[in-house]
Length: 215
Image 1 (cartoon, helix red, strand yellow):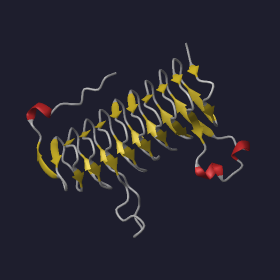
Image 2 (spheres, one colour):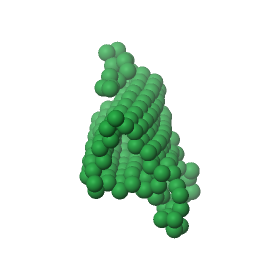
Image 3 (cartoon, rainbow, N blue to C red):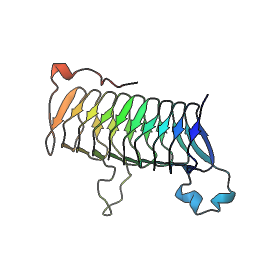
Image 4 (cartoon, rainbow, N blue to C red):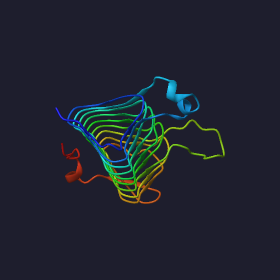
């Protein structure tokens, strides 16, 4: 079994990387969270990142401690994945995407470039997130106390490019959010959200199928 790690990679904590993985230039794995940085983290034993078999992690990616990732994981360049995130098998995370932590991502998920995923978000299996999609988790930034809660994106949903999903919104199973939509309320399963603010329409019959994710 082969494991190829570039000489410039920095590894923190008890990080584990599966067989047949490739880790390229200037990647950081197991980066300490803020609470560890306030301690003498150099002297503290802590759990780093756990990454499964057959990963390809491209240059500039930073994966924090207490992140668990399954097999066949792939990133673009300059991806950030914060602590307490759990990611399943066969997941792609595109260039410049930020996953802010305490997030759960299922299997066969395709996240394109420049996507923002906030704390406390749930993304189920077979989901597609288009480029520049923004998910949010704070209804009243810096104005009122609010328990941060990101969207829940159910199995097989598609989120189009440049769309915005507001906090606590649920995108139903197989639903389709059109490019540029601003989604302010729940989208029922197997329906379509279009516009700003988004309106809900019936999903055409030819789109009532799971996303065809490549293995």
